[in-house]
Image (cartoon, rainbow, N blue to C red):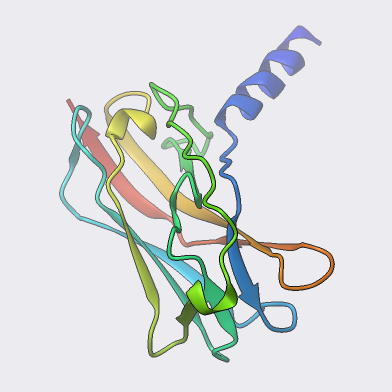
Length: 165
């Protein structure tokens, strides 16, 4: 029983979370896609990550806040070689959410005009120590366009990252 409790605490400590970012989408949002890219060079443990999260929409009915960033709609799931989620050496500082934006202030995202968000977080905010990891982004969207807020979560592909001392 104690092992189960410890496992649940570790899972909770490593679960990716970020406040949602404001967005609007049509229907169920199934036309929205997300992917992540990483630099092929190793990341230094005392350096910064080099990721890009790219959002696109097949039908053009997608708008998203220009404030989309790590800790503002983007969280990272990091696993080790065995597939276990790991906690970072230091927790990532969470940014306060921006104020609600008018629809005209949201960025239109299509397949021809995808949104590319560069991520340059300190490596210690994502990784516990040097090693090889798999990383994917989890994007959490919130629409306040209707009378009731609706949420959507997107998961990217995984990228492999080598972290060195």
